[in-house]
Length: 341
Image 1 (spheres, helix red, strand yellow):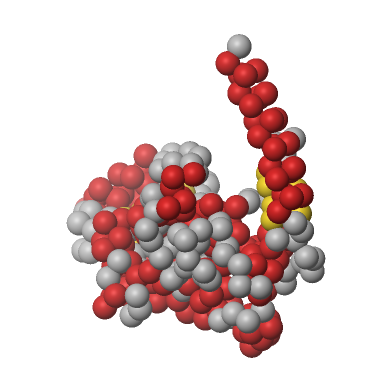
Image 2 (cartoon, one colour):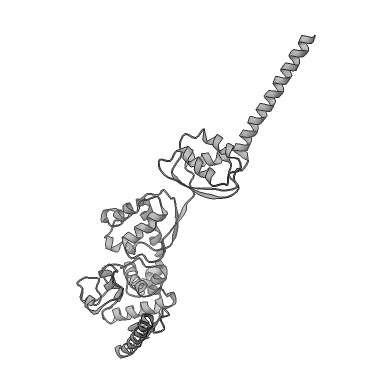
């Protein structure tokens, strides 16, 4: 009887231990799969070639993991992960994170094209800084007619600066395909009709808008400047736009000097009539809209305002323009003298 009691107690102890151990492992499984294991949010970028253990270390280093043991436990079973941009937040469980990485459930990023984009190189650097794509590969693609399907001189007629959501791992080809698609969608029937009303094609609108963007960043004045150039085009006058001359010199000069106006280039609007062969920069939407919806006036000239507030003075005649130009030059000389003291 005593032996049976001992055996029973032993078996009961084993059973209790088994229940406790089983409960412990069951709780671990439940926690890993059902309980959010993070206190905050991180943007995780997984590069090609990264091992699961490396990614786990990056997540642990973020200090948002409630139970590091849970995360390390589930990562032991991860055989492969996909490159990409992933967002981990306070709703995620440990097992969800590993599945997300293994199956490539990426969160899109915002590719933002803004500011001055004067050359394909600048465009490439902006894309390369925000996407996994290498900027050199982007530049090579942008400058190849076979890649983009058009003359590289017309590249900026097919891109409109904005923010675009896309996968961080998107290929260079896919990035440009998306930019071109969004540009085509922006050119609605109404905008094409507005361009035609100005005697321009969508491509010519982009070219003129790029000149307007080179003249001013002051959005309220862009329709007035666009109208000056449209007025010049309508009477067969040369555009005589300084930004086109700056383009001929790779935007290196800080000021346009008289001798520069003689540079031999189809982009030199002091030398040749009409629009240049293509945009001299990537025009923002405000400048495109300014060309499509210009102010109505008879001005043919404009000059920077002597107050240096970024605005301009407009004139209908060259005589009026000379007065404005002299006022600005006088103010500029006085400012330079003051700065030299």
